[in-house]
Length: 213
Image (cartoon, rainbow, N blue to C red; front, side, top):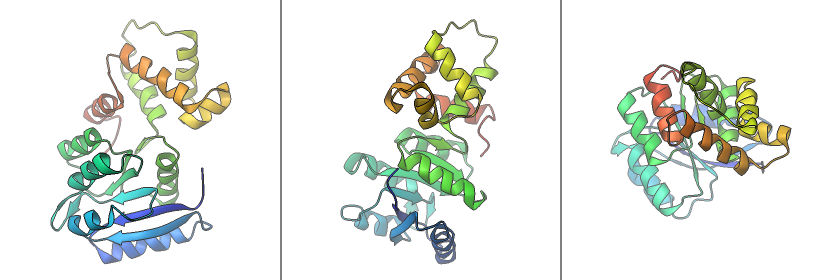
């Protein structure tokens, strides 16, 4: 993790933006607000030039939705991370955002410490959907425990570490392998659970109440 993490805040309410800036400025200089936008149009104007690592993206904006911004980021700046931060709990909209390639979703009702965690997860190349993707694997596996699924020894190790609540970075450190290798094993686990990718995993988790919107 390289600090400070540079953030683009896309949020139409000035008081919410000010609150985010104040909250983030209180965590030991780990975060820098690179720019702020209050609309889709303003965010799209900033995107080509803003020096940011993570976008904190609201869903409902006065001239459209964050979905348009997320799709634009994925087509023009694929390395820029997207963390959706919204009070919106419409399942279809959340699923569209997940399918567009956002890196995480958290509610505006979370405490600051969870916001810091979510930002650091996505900035570090992981995913965070109200809980780390590892915890989602654990819970989906538990929900489907009646399936007769055979895992390799390494996959069982990773599932066991997921069950301990460890994130991908922590699992990689514990097993002395790369995060990419952990993620490769996770995708094999997805397939054995009847799920093709993290989008389907999150969709399943939302529909079955494993992720609380």
